[in-house]
Figure (cartoon, rainbow, N blue to C red):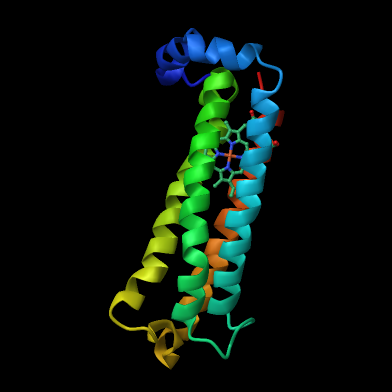
Length: 166
Ligand code: HEM
């Protein structure tokens, strides 16, 4: 299914000198893919540690805020690397992603996950023990499970893009 509204932009990117240069290089795309997948592992590891702490399965002796302080910077910096490497992959082969509905699904899930992560962290600004309070414990677990499902779906979509080419 071609995403018609993105076709002019896709064509403009594909005809740009940068896209042609990346496309003609034998090393840029594989190298950037390696960076992308390494950043995926960093972000997923940090998310997993924060969500397992929310679920009460690891680090129970530490305050939840400690686990966020420790792992959250890895998530945001990792996302920055993913954004830059992802942009380079798009410019190199714009039709593979910009004309692919799975890519749009991945980006939508990513926005949802980033919002969920920000919402989970927000209470720590005024109450370090917010999610540990008995009345918030089930909400904390639900947020952690939703977060894990969303992030795994993003990884699956990233891989799935390669198998949904026209
Ligand atoms: C931040 C913005 C992001 C952009 C613009 C982006 C873009 C891309 C692009 C263009 C591809 C290549 C797809 C293909 O041609 O087969 C890709 C692959 C992939 N992405 Fe992303 N991505 C981003 C973030 C993420 C995140 C957050 C994750 C997961 C946590 C992720 C996981 C993957 C995976 C697993 C692949 C497959 C790699 C491979 O098969 O070599 N991406 N991404």
